[in-house]
Amino acid sequence: VGPGRIRAGAVARAVREEGAGYVVDAGADGAFAADAVVLATPAFVAADLLEGLAPAAAAGLRRIPYVSTGVLALLYPEGTGERLPRASGFVVPRGRAAILACTFVSRKWPSEAFGDRAVLRCFLGGAGAEDLLEVEDAEIVEGVCRQLAAVLDLPPAPEAWALVRWPRAMPQYEVGHGELVRGVVAALPPGIFVVGPAYRGAGVADVVRAAGDAAAGAVARLRGGVPERTEGTWTTS
Image (cartoon, rainbow, N blue to C red; front, top):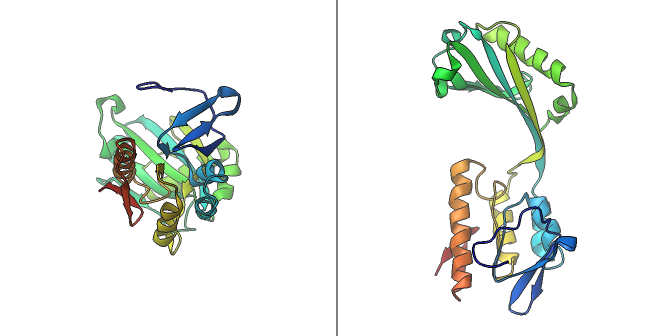
């Protein structure tokens, strides 16, 4: 689409080879020529886009499982902030509660905007507990807050709350994940890169580092070099 241009709203349907480069097919939104393509999508979406171009890589990408999760933010009344333990939060053993973990937001990231209110962020769902996210919002909030009140000095109900569901959003690293990712990378055509939490770490720092590697590989491709691929990463040779 030209230097320095962003095309918003166009939905990519497939990536195909054309001459020495590629074309990103966006259906009715057009087709875009590219010398290099970085797929910053969930692995299963990247698999659909690459099915015709790199079927072996697509097959590997589809082997990375995903689960659904949710985040519940809770704001408690004034006077509850100092009731929280002086810690950043806690993690729950699987099957012991409705939540996976809880962050004491008002302790970890204090702000005058909180006043003396306890602000918490709870993580829900995940492997083996995805059915919880099918429950009505109010029922989820009531159950989580009841369990929190049993272990923390907090009221049985918050002053305000917000619940966000993330369907099929969390990649799972099964045994052999590293080998699987190396196989996917090896099967990608030159100039095609995948990046995101499904590959070399789900944390923000991991994804940023991997994005930098993919960008370096794309730049090497644009300059006529050959990106060196090792251990599921891209570095310029």
